[in-house]
Structures are given as C-alpha cells and as structure tokens.
Image (cartoon, rainbow, N blue to C red; front, top):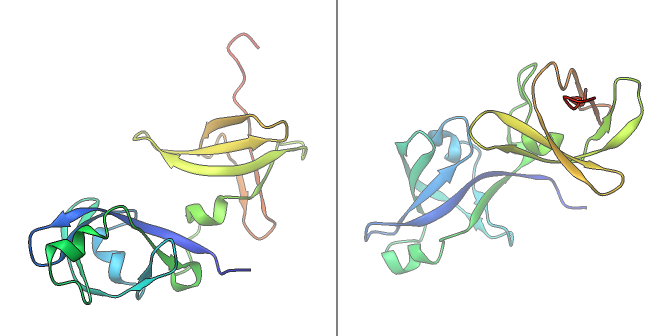
Length: 168
C-alpha cells in the first residue's frame, strides 16, 4: 500500500522566461507550498522548490530546481503537486485535512450506515462533503457543525444529519 498523499497545488502555467511556473495552491497560505519538503507529481516524480514567491491569495510563482527556461517550465503545466500526509503537521482540534475525510464511513445519528465520504469540495460558499450512498447515488451536504456534528477520524466515521426536503 502506498503512503497517502495530500494535494498542495497544481501548476497552471509557465511564468516569464526564466523557468518559473504559476501554481494554484490549496494550502492555508501560498508560501506554505514549500514548507514540507520536495513535492511529487501524479506519477511520483520528486520536484525540489528552488524559489517561491506569493503572487496572490491562492497562487505562488515557483521555480523548480533544474528548470531554467520557459520551454522546460511549460512542460509542468497541469501537474498536480503532492506531499506525503506524514509530512504535514497534525491539524488543530476541529480542523481536518480533506485527505483524512475522504473514505470515512458516513452514519446517520442513529448509527445506520449511509455510505462514505467521496470528496470534499469548495465551490466558493464553504466546504461541502460529497457523500456516496450504498445504492450508488451521491449528494452534497454542507460541512457545518449542525449537518456534520461528529467527525471521528480515529474511528473512521462521521455522523451526518441529512437535510430534509421542504415537503418532507
């Protein structure tokens, strides 16, 4: 079994002519992209960040070691950048890494299994959990305390109060 990895960013484009790339970051702050050691690509290739500067709230300009020109930088476009989950600090109480939530069992308040967490998304209005139900259907639910009152990573489960239909 391979060690779990956490997606920290994705290369969106080359930047300038000196081998830099723009990276959309998924870290709390873009400058944290280089804080956990080398990043790896989807295929496992290790990349050392030689230089990094914050471009805006969710973007950094990065130069990888050995990348000295635009042509080389353009080859990185679309690359997802990961680190091993063990490289990250433990989250504070009430905070969670998305990677730790995916795959957790989803129970209702009575303890009945509903399915699993299939994904964690943020479309601009806050985090939502994508629940994959046993029958194959999926549904998005807000990742808020009233809807998800229990997150027990150690037990491998969360509890979800599914919103009721207005007619229901």
